[in-house]
Length: 446
Ligand SMILES: Cc1cc2nc3c(=O)[nH]c(=O)nc-3n(C[C@H](O)[C@H](O)[C@H](O)COP(=O)(O)OP(=O)(O)OC[C@H]3O[C@@H](n4cnc5c(N)ncnc54)[C@H](O)[C@@H]3O)c2cc1C
Image 1 (cartoon, rainbow, N blue to C red):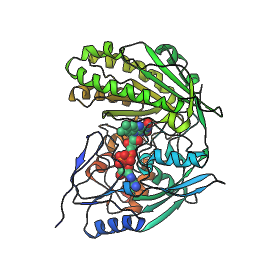
Image 2: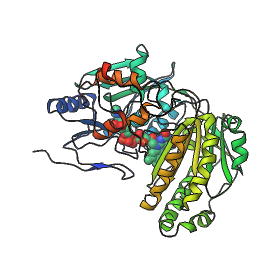
Image 3: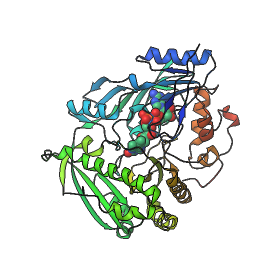
Image 4: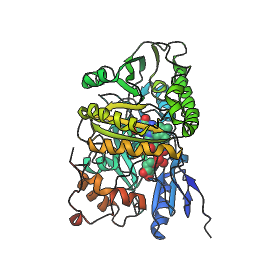
């Protein structure tokens, strides 16, 4: 008799009780789990560390948790590149590469997530020269719907491009080969200025450093700016510990989130009392500057927009959020990136701006997510696949010019919909024979 196990996401946004929960430690183990699901006609979903803010990875049928299939397989210093098992945490990979004098070209803020989870949802950091991590994928090994292992390389650009950002809907990624760069440090400078002044010269600001981040609390008119410049300067004493200030800020925001659920009007004033503010420029190791421990659990929503539309979107967001009178203690974050050509990449089509709203988990704050989503949609936003959103396939198809190309590959690799859970059906629609793929519906194409 099968015993059901409970699995839930980091934020508690989704949970499931899979009939089969496996934690393979080998590629053969992954293939066996998929073959068994095929024999028993179960839906199968791959899961990383469950850091997505939705039910992407969840299923009550067969869940393959990749977190024990981890570690570096090979480093190629000539390319340079690294081949890594799917369940390796990004932070673990970054540290291993650093020991080899290498680094990932760019990463986001979370070290705990898996490499496969990150690429599958189009995870990004910030920096106008840097596309999402998935764009750095040179090859993958994919366990298909029959449990067969396929090697996808740049020799077959169409298949690889689809597999790079695929939400686990084409199969289970086993190993991933990523482009690397020489290890680097970051000279980091924080500042603040009127939000409108940054928006006036947004394109220029976006390219003013290797990595830029804008943070803005909607009740105020001032924005915080963070600029990180790649450098060969040594790390400032204590520089690699500066990330813990950001963690302290998150703890503060978490506490205010609890207070703010009761007295939302107090949030702006209390946020200003945070004692751990900026203490001047410093230099740190690249991956330690990019990431920081995030112990407080929250909900988040993020949209990718054509870079040039970010200023108008933020200007529209200001009255919409202020009008609600409920304030999240977390800042709205704006990051930037280069485009990507994977059909389902939120950065498909060119330079991209990412607008993120984080809110405490209290139900009171959920209304803010809906408010932001409405504004972002109106300004051509594509929701981050791994974050909270209400879009369905009818809306999303109209946002992705190569939607049908992805659906064709999906029908080819998984004709029976083995990887199509209810949530996947919501966001991607059912698997259809290529001739039956409908015209893209919905809103304007980017
Ligand atoms: C605190 C926090 C900070 C974050 N910061 C950022 C950020 O800076 N930038 C950003 O872009 N995003 C960010 N995210 C979002 C995060 O990058 C994504 O949600 C990512 O998918 C999480 O990876 P995971 O390992 O938890 O994957 P999961 O959430 O477990 O899975 C995500 C998707 O990947 C698929 N998947 C996982 N493993 C495999 C596999 N082996 N083969 C095929 N499919 C697979 C799953 O089926 C699912 O569709 C953040 C999230 C949190 C909670």
